[in-house]
Image 1: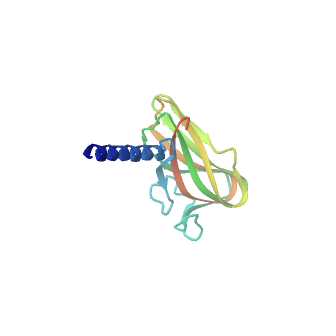
Image 2 (image 1 turned 45 degrees about the vertical axis):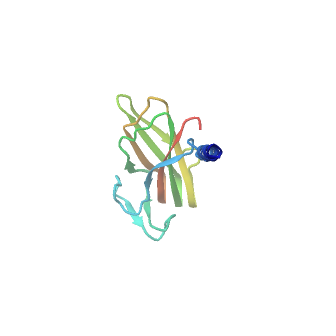
Image 3 (image 1 turned 135 degrees about the vertical axis):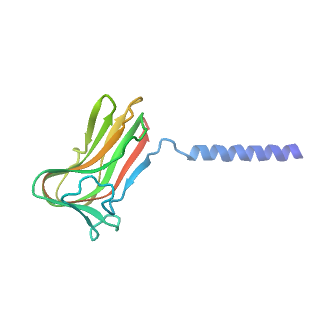
Length: 176
């Protein structure tokens, strides 16, 4: 009887472990950096930008830029993030008003001894007036490609008013 109880307990434990392993999806994207833009802390470009508490995608404030000429707003740098063999995605919520030209995200990855390489969200830039839209741009890191710094920018290639909020850096294994 003890053997039957032990066997039943073992089967139950293995079934539970198998169910947990199957429910865990190691290929799922993982947020590795969050920049809520509730204040100017950590922000690189501080000229021509301000926190807007009245217009925000998350209700806590956003970064507002009003420009009369093209500008690249340098937002954040990560430093070494210890990633390789993965898809790194820069994602943000963006809103525009009266933009003449294009607005898009830009991510620069720096590799020791190799230089800097970029990814831009040119597949779906914003122009004119838009409510909050989710924008993103990926960078594919092969095995052995480990950036020692990642720069997150917002490019306003024109003029108008732009808000950015809820900035995320997301990692997912390649091929998943």
